[in-house]
Image (cartoon, rainbow over all chains, first blue to last red; front, side, top):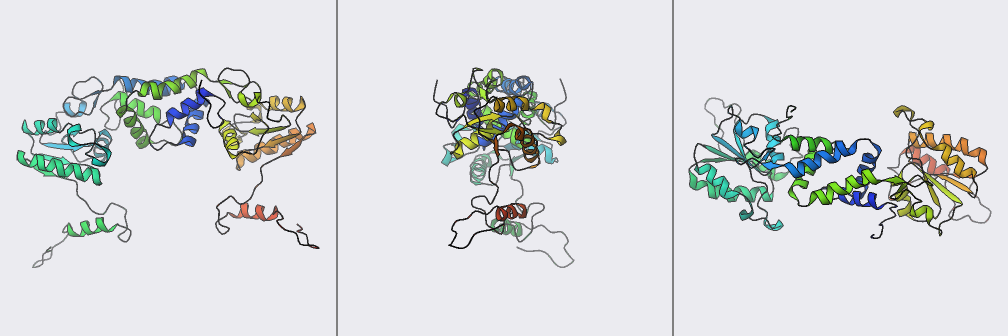
Length: 214
Length: 214
């Protein structure tokens, strides 16, 4: 038995806390709070442990979008015939897909990269299913590819790389608009965002004889 | 099969996210981030699920302090003969015990109440092992009982209740000092704390012929 750390009287508790500390952003104090919470409630094996175990062991991927699929066949979104096949939205992971679905307004299909190009983190294009994405676009029926990534170094790197690859395929390539987020004051908007928002300003009313010029 | 919520394409994922949302303070977005993190790493059944399951099923209590004990016999702290039996520190749960151990300086024994009196939350004194605590003190050998609870309504209520009960047992009763926390500026200290800190001020230097009076 290894040495008990930091005054723990229970190895079972110490090991469970270490396990919970593997969650992103969860430190020792939160992990202790989580485990005590689980211990103080009943049926936590059935209600907490089992669903996570089932997901870890049973999860499969949709062969079309590479997102999640419980059965390994096409996921409900890919199989949804009310959605257009003409627009393909490329996202980093299913969380981003969920965020776009909740925002509403997009009625096309998705392609889940499963990550972003991140040279600093050791993730190059060859580790992402980019060949599969290009094949899907080449197979036809897609008019527009929307590269919907987070606005950061990895997102921009991936957009840049995919744009170069997709440009050869005669397809419209777009990215979400950049500008001032809802609820932000002009003064507090960072200068990169504000500069971009001003350069890409949109007309709301053009009086006769006047036009906004850049 | 129930309806999939909020655009999830996987019931396995949706259920695992719901499971993680049972952790205190964890919302849907954090739960999704946690589950994706677990899915993206390997061996998470062994390294995450199993330690938590083992803790939930195997955890027992020390018969003396009611804290954790893997085997159901006296915990290492209670069995530690280098610690004095004369001082008994009463805490709400093992997290508080760990915090006191890390602070250092206390070398007595503990008693873990497993909760605090919380009339609003429906927890009365009869749901806590108070009879067991009083018995332990009555059995003798304890000079001082330290009631070390959080500084809030539940902590103060429990201190008040236990003080009344313990006063009959001819034992010194104490609570941790209240005052300004380390690193706090005087201006930002809340008025209750500041008032208490001033009333309970401690002498650092008493010149001849002068004394701090209250």
